Image (cartoon, rainbow, N blue to C red; front, side, top):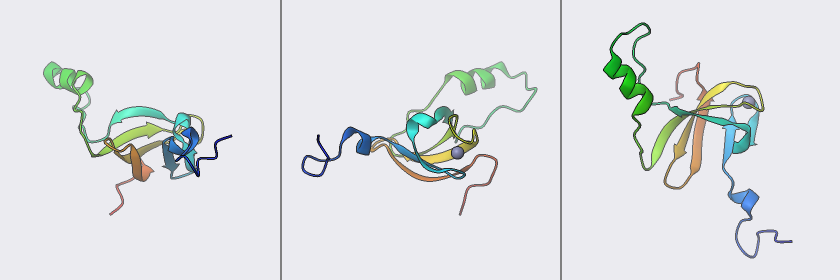
Length: 103
Ligand SMILES: [Zn+2]
């Protein structure tokens, strides 16, 4: 059995971990990715079809630090904002989506 100490990290050690503000560190498979947390949604009731089209169908593909929405579907079911580096797939701070970003 490969413990990962002599040959680098094992598959489980390389897997993305996410810190849920309620539950602590968990494997990413407990979460569902829910999109870009930096996009602004068109105003509720807006009839601006171009703005809705752009919001729903157009996405940036940033490289580096990014903020994303995730939901802890196999835990507390809360929505959170996660800072993730898309180039290295490492995670940073996270907080509940209903709260303001920490300073
Ligand atoms: Zn949770």
